[in-house]
Length: 209
Image (cartoon, one colour):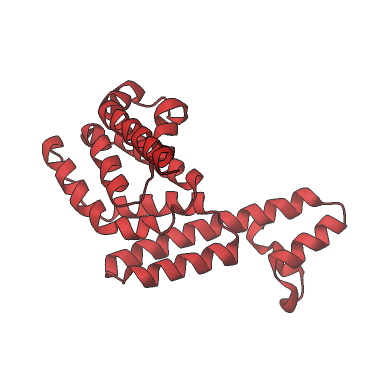
């Protein structure tokens, strides 16, 4: 029944906008929001499915980026939601090695290739933080990746997928509890390096004034 609610309207008015407006005006805002949410969930699933197909076909990144941006606009999907979908799609296109010492190398090689695609959808600090949390979650849930976390973050920093501010925020107070002690320890030296680099650039800026 849920999927057929739209059919209550004439064919030329079977849009979420019309449905939403009609039921909001009728005092049934909850129903209007429910349908909007259902459409968003459906659009996300469709986007993930199509993305995985495009990646397995080896479509050019510029075409994939264009497609994703159109879907974001059409279905009002946020960049944070999209970066999580892209991460999940990128990680599901590979048969990962079961040996911990080999999987990190395999992951770096694979993710380096997909960095331009990920970078296109981390234009906001919040999207970068979402990606960091997804990486943390993935490395925790897939035990062979536990030691690869820091290497992935450093790769993304060098590839300009991630910037220093969200990394420092993640380290300070925005990380998940999952594997926290292991990942914070892994990131300690890199975070110290980031802080020093930040201080140096600030002092250089002051000297240049």
